[in-house]
Length: 315
Image (cartoon, rainbow, N blue to C red):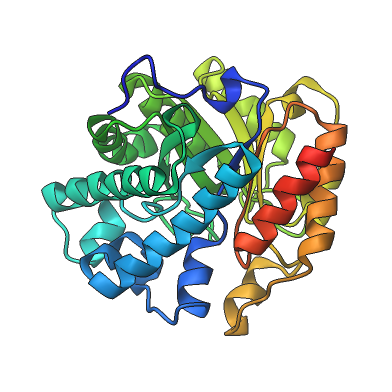
């Protein structure tokens, strides 16, 4: 674990820029030809050759952060390392906690290899939805979500995570539960929503309604909010200069403008236009200066994130 003297400032504590990674699963599947049972990247740590690919993936991003002299948030590998997904892969509670610990240990090793300073190395425990991110998880209450995600958050805390990031959430109830579980564990939480082509969450709420509802239910517990697994042309138009919008500090956009259902059926990688995506990030940074966490989601990799980083720094 980092000592207090070397613990990094987190995005909500600094105006500095933080890079994070891209579309982990899509890169592993389409760029390295790996099979991801139940879309679970963490499970690949049980295979030596797959682990080498994962280390290559994070090392290349860490090298970008070193070149651009930014902080880097290690994230995403444990996206499906929670109870229900773990059970499908044969893990009991103890085994799943060990895998979450291994994810953070790999991050530390890669950061050290890349020469990323401790004060610029943020270890984030990544949380994914209890169910499928592209389906409405009916019946999941805030209380149920808090109880479900608490075990993974506790594993992150024991492993020395600096924060937790919940990605691809499509309903406020689960976001509320995660925020409360993180608060109870004493870890800052970033809550990231995904929008459909109608510019709303799959549950029907607008982004404004979702952020305001979570803040009201948790008394502003999330350290900040993010948007991921959507494209700027879909989420950009809903942003405003209102207080709720100022709570958004992070973006992890898809490379493609295609909707979620189409992307899942393509059977190949859709990488979009990295230069155009970088320009869209630059414009968003100029419009919303509080944003300081930048990475990618489906279809993005090192090329996209480096271009994004350079474009945002130039802005």
